[in-house]
Image 1 (tube, rainbow, N blue to C red):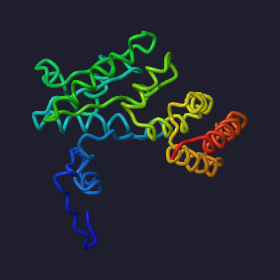
Image 2 (image 1 turned 30 degrees about the horizontal axis):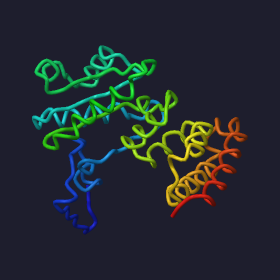
Image 3 (image 1 turned 90 degrees about the horizontal axis):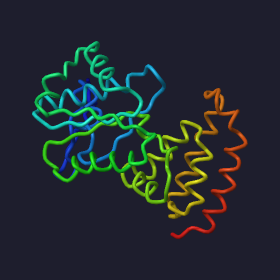
Image 4 (image 1 turned 60 degrees about the horizontal axis):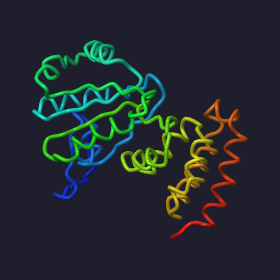
Length: 231
């Protein structure tokens, strides 16, 4: 792939973790930013899970400890699916280098279980990488302000908004806005900009018109919160 004369320089503070995908690492200037939370989004069949498998496979090859969290597929199904795409993780799993963990969203401890697993991979910064599936970011099971705080701290406010705007979960976003957990004017204005982009793609999303009323309600609530928000 040509770089058209551009040279990329990555400082120590901007260390990258390779994805293992030829061409993508070059586009990302070396891979995902180390220590970051990266959202891989797309419609079903666009290869999100394969990207995750490739990322983990690269970590296994580099002798790194890897974690895969899921709430929408059983572990056996995931392992078999990986094999169909040429990724055999059996040895890494048996050796303790790779861990697949299924999280049951019906359990009241699910948020703590997820946070504990992710925290383990953040406390020790060397040679760690973690992946979670899209459905694992389903916050509809939020049962308390404490659980909401944990989710926002793990995924970040912007990622939370992006996931649920794409899923048309406008009522859930409004609930979060009204809770006051997101009260910085910059975050709220960022959400407003995201909503404008969603509305601009209305003709491309056949599901959006059915949620027009809840989206309008969210916009009104958001405008009110922006006026009340702190800088």
